[in-house]
Length: 179
Length: 290
Image (tube, rainbow over all chains, first blue to last red; front, side):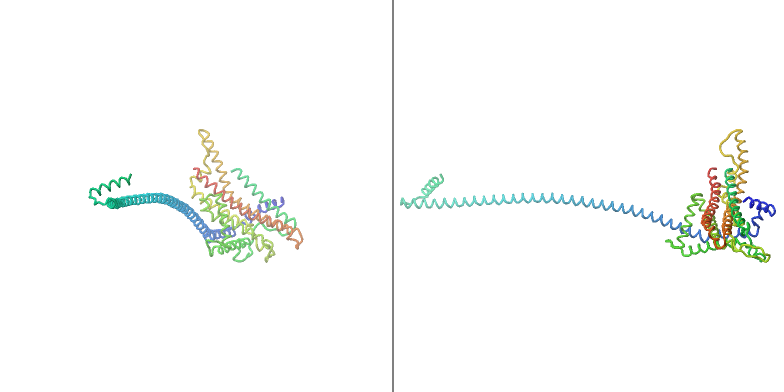
């Protein structure tokens, strides 16, 4: 190694440092031009389109994520609205059922009351009719009984009874029957 | 900055050591030594400006361009095949450099770092293809020269990349932080001092600034020699090891070093671009403080 360094040093001293390493203008400029061309070509045909595409994809992913967030938010809101609507519908249904039950109970009560009232009316009317019929029967019976008593009395006594006698005998007979 | 200088010097020495190890091995084996300089296979023709390393750079550049054309020919939002690989590569590199440079700087400069990394890596790996550096031709004067040579085993190529970066570094630094902040970063006194301390520190920082200028000008040199030294040293090592044994067993001692050279090729591509990115960030980051 020492020999090499010493040899390189001697060579450099003899030829000049840059000449030792073969650095000269034609080679250097050619390599410089090569390198610059490679830089320009890669910049234009490799990095630019790839970076643009990566940027485009990043934007699309960001947009997608943004949309996903919005959709999730809308879905949550929609679910909330649906739940609220269901809750409201359930509440309405419960209220309607309660009201219907209450209404049915009220109607039932009303109908029952009406039925009771109607029955009572019918009973009252029947009683009235019975009372009236009884009175009529009693009147007819009294008349018949009076006529029978008068006829019997007239047949037994053999005399013609006056109206006053008939009236008095009937009253006495009725009084004794009723008592 | 002093530590940077020491670090640069150490790396430079390391590169020379690797270079010397390879050359030493080849020399010890009595085999053909890979020369330190590139040669033109077209010497004596109008194309004598084309060197054997330049052919490898063209091949590397051609491969990258063909790959990129194939990857970007029919681009789809849902990637497949080449496009998928190219996107993975570009995105990984972009994220890597974004971690160093930040979102703003990486948008401006990624094309340079990405292209440089891909070119260095491809050219480094192409240099490992059997035949590169080991096929020789003899010219009319009896001089033996390699037909192909690793692209980065040529100081002209590494210097071209380092100097291009140096020019772009100055341009990016000026456009990002302005000339005033640029020079303030190098020469201005850091911290708040009063009285005599202020004057003393101003002189101190001015002198440190001069050293900083020296270090800035050393950067392209260090970048060039680090990459050149590592790649040349690796090739020389492979060639030297192959010469240690009979030719039918030549592949054997070199085989483990091939795996190491695969790693070195990647590491050196990373080191070159990473250092460039750090140099840029150091200067442009400082602008935020002013």
